[in-house]
Image (cartoon, rainbow, N blue to C red):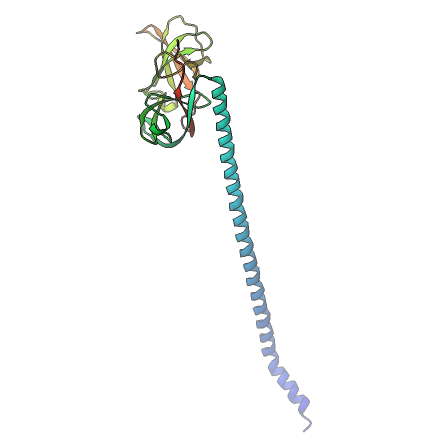
Length: 250
């Protein structure tokens, strides 16, 4: 009837809002698809980065273990070269019992490795202590700063003799003291203290520590020296047990 254009125009007017909505919905769906695709790509990339990070962390950890092992072996060889008459058994600290009254290390070597009581324990830095208890595959060691530890010692610079022993007042600060130093002895702050080899437990010449303070005992009329050991008792992880040595005078 000649009204086709008008009908088409009317229908177009009616349909336009719906077309706009459908268009926007389509754009929204496409946008969401793109969003989720982007999120999935980011998630996958994040997982790859995490995996790479874990791999790098493991490589760094392994490298640090190798470096630590190499350092220990170098120090072991250094001790062997310095003390040719010593026989060593390397050990790892696998346990640490620390209270306000006493610290004890558990080591990864025992009777089956040739360890016995009273054997000295050292690091490349110096004396740690001695073995107090031995099992088949483990042993326990007490640091030289404990009150039940004592070792004959001398001042490297002058040869002045004394006894290094643990002190309850000093142990929490990682210190010990050198006693029985005759009045008038040539000793001063900064002097190095070494084992004298007197007795059967410790060989001669193992570094103990450094004199940090001097006082006079009026009762005994002797000097008392505060000694800071070279060994780091809080961080020690690898040690060497001296299983054999030539005693002083042999």
